[in-house]
Image 1 (cartoon, rainbow, N blue to C red):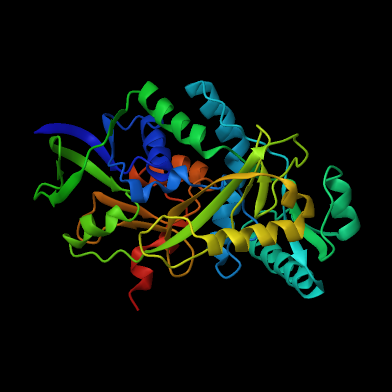
Image 2: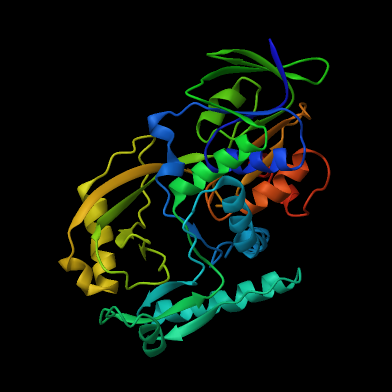
Amino acid sequence: MKKVDIIVIGGGLSGASIALGLVREGAGKVVMFDEQLPTQRLSRGNFGLTWFMPKGANSPVYARWSRMATMLWPEFAAKLEEESGYDIELEWNGGAMHAIGDEQFQAYADSIDTLTKTCSEEGLDYPVRMLDREEFASMIPGMKLGDDVTGAMYSAEQGHVNPLPLLGALRCAFQKKGGEYFGGLSVSKIVPNDDGTVTVLTSQGDYQCDKLVVAAGHGSTRLLADLGEKLHIYPQRGQLIVTERVKKVLHFPILAVRQTMDGTFMIGLSTEDSAYDPKVTVEAMKSQASGAIKLFPELANLNWVRGWGAIRVMTKDGSPIYERLPGHKNIYVIAGHSAVTLAPVKEKHIASWILEKDEAPQISHFSNGRFNV
């Protein structure tokens, strides 16, 4: 039996962000397990937006939580790159959601009013404004807008990253600070002990820890079922398509279209109920391509070279789950999507909460138990 202070089950963006926060806070011996199932590699299928707009339209607390996360992003990225030596390719140049037609344009404008008031209640700004078609076009002179685009919702305080080096940087910094990472390791069972410690049975031996963090995406459902806890998440497939490399002309991301540092265009705005099947489909690719070309007609002239799918971890209300398991005070559950956007608050606030040093007031609103009605 190997004994450690904290085990994090799940080596994706969520688990790695929390694990890094734990070792930065001096949590002792922290280990991270990553099963690496091919159907659950969401962190490698991510669009890469560091984005708060317009998240939380129906959840004021989530709106504030997302805004807090993006406010932390520039400093978080700089520190992570310094510690790891990775370039995570953060472009903090803003971001937009284009509108098709006057009705959608007005709906976006109304959402800005609502979320500005929501964030101001906790002393947070909401730096988002509407751009008419002319101003939107002037900000992307290297591309021509489609005829149906009426304008866009825009914020200068968000951007995008490359999720692959981001994941590598988180794991690297975690290990450089003394954490241990185990890839290809399967967890079979979680066993709470009478003294408050937790035993974790794995394919590479058994471990005992003082605190356990379960952040294994859809793999968490099986592990928690044995403890009598139903995790309220469901799978949702998203698909992405990427083009050949061309000259960089789009300098900030649109919700469904972004251009990476190496010149490839990426599109992705599909949602499908497909259980745990990550394959790509012609129907979704056609739909996404059609929408992207409606925004930027010249995309029809590019070679689209690759597509892939990934299975999101979704909740019924779209907000994350942060839960200290009832009856097991040393077992913590983390689940939900937006792992890129929320990485800084997980590294800072969730790690502090787990160590019982400080608890951000938003955390209590995101319990798994809120769905037990």
